[in-house]
Image (tube, rainbow, N blue to C red; front, side, top):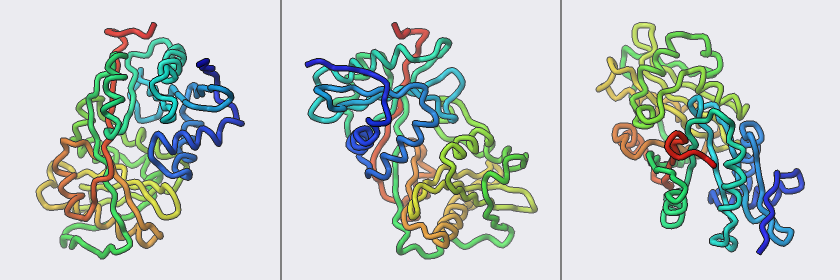
Length: 303
């Protein structure tokens, strides 16, 4: 079998969308949005062709949320073509496109594919270091849930309008105690907003104020007419123990229902017991698990 690896062309897009839908287990519309996002952040996007058909794809990308000196490298191969060297050919070609000076390469996988993906990545010196759980909430039966304490004021704003608000920026940093922040470093509020701006879709931010200062926040980004992603929820350490994460998320749900949302999805690290408990209490159910993998190029250079 001869595998041709080349740059993705416009004529390949329908096949790549079908492949993304298969490998990511998402709808064709979701796969199209993924490809449109990659159009904006990918440094290179490759396809593998066998007998004139696209059977695999790979990308090297630098999304805004990744730390400096880190890129994401992802490979996907259609089911019938797996185990035949297609993924290896794509990886080897993509690896040559990693920019000089890069210190770490990250990959992402669905934990339902662990049996095949983990050994494949281990042979390429990738270490699985984070396990996020995706949960979803059906909003069609949502009813206002959490009473707001008398000293708390709820604000709902466009997140981009807070870009120059130092109080919101400080709250974002101070409230982030997630395990993933410990592993790859925390991000700034402006970085979070930059990442959201890449999609150019509508965002909503709930802020809970006490004595005129924000102490809790919950952020969502629109994915489609009816689907939204909840990207972040956090509470300042001094305001914890009052159930404000639940209040903030419930207020966010109320607002999104008014905007026509019927489904929410969120990712949380498996070890982040606090927010996963809040999610479960609000009715979120597990959808899937996503793993992050890393290769330290100081220890294992790409040759």
